[in-house]
Image (tube, rainbow, N blue to C red; front, top):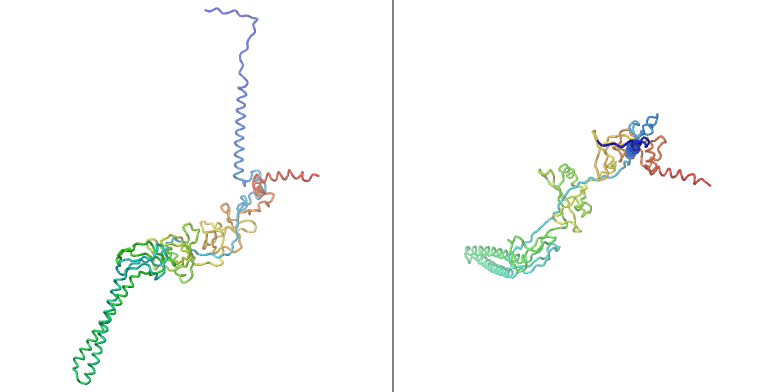
Length: 454
């Protein structure tokens, strides 16, 4: 065993180590930080509630007698905050009844010009895409063989006419001799029959001459209608005939031009009743922004398409600007008729409920009344009120989602005139909206003494 050193009784005694005080301070700081964090979270939550619910009344103010009527007087019977709404006045206006449809441009006539006789194509007198008139010369076929045929037919006719003339003279002589009893009646009858045969031959000769003359005229290929010529399908020097599938040219009439469209079968009786009246039709482009041309309603088909439940209709356009092209798709707006002096309101004012359509009507005491109405024809931004509303009455167009029958409302621009007992949030909104109005009031209050000082 090791020997221990002797203990000096006069040596100083060393005290035991003590735990630092900073550990105890750390626990207090943690507790204080937790309390501060909870307070910050509660403050942020309260601020978020105030920002998202500016019209919610405070509990202390709502518990005071009469405070609920000032802060929450907008609901039915004064049980909610007043709501700022937008209004519109019912007025009289003309409502056009318009049918919108998708249509296809179709020409009134499309003709493929084919030669009537066979021959060598000698000249082509048109250009591709050219506008031509009715009867304008398009092409020429070599006419020489047809000229020879015409001369031959003319010579045959002249010969038959000469023979007929000689036969008539002989018949007249035979009749004179028969009166003198110098000739037999049989010879007179035979000569009369010969005259009739020659008359028939003359008729046939004239017909052959007419056919030859007609064939010669067919060597000049002319346009049967006014329109635009398409692409050329044959060149000079080719032998053409009436059996060619492509022909010489394709001509399409484009002025005037038609637009075919389909209307629902429920609207067909309305069109049929107004068929004799003037109904304006507009053709718009695919974006529905540009009006290509304006025309009139032309006709309505006589049966309903059982597969689509629609009826085909047609509108006619002059197409003077050539804005409509055959087989083009356009949007058609057909103005069937116009309702004169109808009571109209904005579309946003009419709402639909379980019992039908209704509007909120603003009364003189700044409350609203729910009133059932009957909806009529509608346009893009206006709707007709057939019954239930009078001209001059004010209806709610904005903020109606938060209203009920008897709710109190605040008009735009009138929130600054709220009574003193109104809620603080409503006063802030009426004075300029939220914290911005409060800052302006404080700034005005700080500047007031300075302006009154000498």
